[in-house]
Length: 231
Image (cartoon, rainbow, N blue to C red; front, side, top):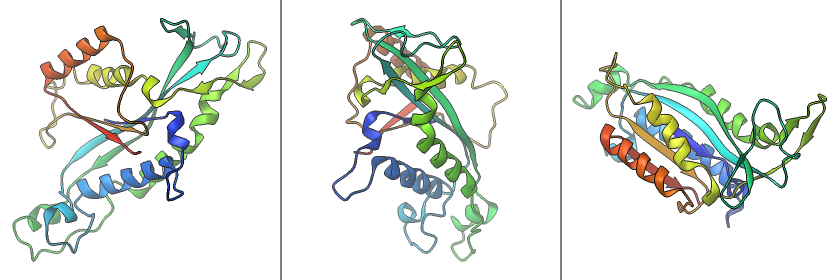
């Protein structure tokens, strides 16, 4: 699973003028090229060339929207939640795409016989990156546009900061699907991993009990976590 945290900081600019949202798109593209072994085909070392592996990657966008009052976020299909300090919020999750990264036979042979030419067929297809990029840019309009009971629509709420995002809740969504990972296991793929991209500093305000539960579940199933800060 690759979780992309959609917080206010994602629309901040770096010193070179690039937006963190753009850095996120570039990172995903390089990540897929690395795991398909096509990052730099002419490179001599494996680190620069990439490692041809097989993965099924689910890309999920998640974020929290905070509302000033209950009428702002009023919507029949999704009730509001309330934090301990009384702040009203609603969490959003969206599957942006599922990428099947497959190492070709030519790539696997090249690990043993360097003279074999690499297969340069895109894996995953470039359309996956394009679809994810579109979902990233549509996020604000998707979560801010609310439907009133009378059918009219309005924009309401604000994106939470990175340290307020529901990172543990997102991780537990992936852990739920890993509960019975040994049933009908695909032996061509090994290991279970959660990758989180954040525009913040990787520090969060979380509930202690939920943190303990998440830690126990990850240790029990042997699941790794990579928390990557784009800032």
